[in-house]
Amino acid sequence: MTHPTEQARAHIMAALEACQEDPALADILKDLTHLLARAQRRLFPAGQLPVESPGCIEMMRRAMETLAQALQLLQDIEEESKAIGVAAKSIASALQLLHPLVLDAPEMKARISRKPSVPPYADSVDVDTMLSTGSHHQIYTGFSQDIKDGGIFIATFEPRENGSEVVVNFKLPKDKNISALGVVHFVREYNPNVPELPPGMGVQFKNLSRANQDAIESFLETRTAMFYDE
Image 1 (tube, rainbow, N blue to C red):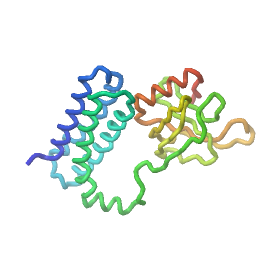
Image 2 (image 1 turned 30 degrees about the horizontal axis):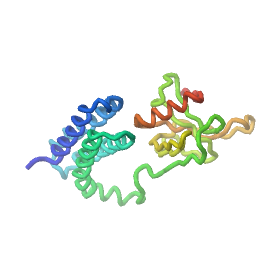
Image 3 (image 1 turned 90 degrees about the vertical axis):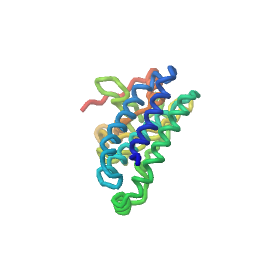
Image 4 (image 1 turned 180 degrees about the vertical axis):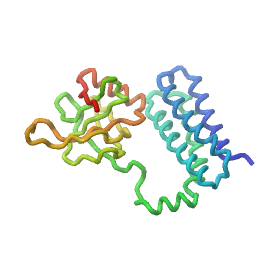
């Protein structure tokens, strides 16, 4: 009997082949290939283990997380493309195959029962104003000046703890909505001696999609990024 991870890997290969055939996807191909290759690396050793074994379940779970990121990357692309449709459908098929195997596993049910019934990354942070040259919320970068290594500073008196994973939702000019996964990178406490410096937290982006990256870089052409270095 074919191991389900082999079937999932076949779906992943179909997704990658579809994207490689479309020159219009050249800009995201590197990021997409990286994510799909990571999922493949997690599924290959899982295929050497019994499906119900804890090791196999854990590797399939981690592969699902990576595939979800790859699917989001494709969904963020605004242009229409047959290749995108084929790739997205193939990745979704892999996720549908793995989902019941992971979620129905006894150890996963036990893990879920010990946690509050909230979805992953449910801690969502909404920036209630559009980023502009006058807002306290700012995009920040480090020495590399690469936005993929940077994030967004959110002015708030109620920052999350360092290391917390959050989803940040904010808007750029021209009604461009951004929703990105991130990690709290630093916290700036309120300092009464420098009241003009707003308190808040810096959320470093994780797996920023190409479309969101381009939108943020376009915004930074009109506003200099805040600098932050550890």
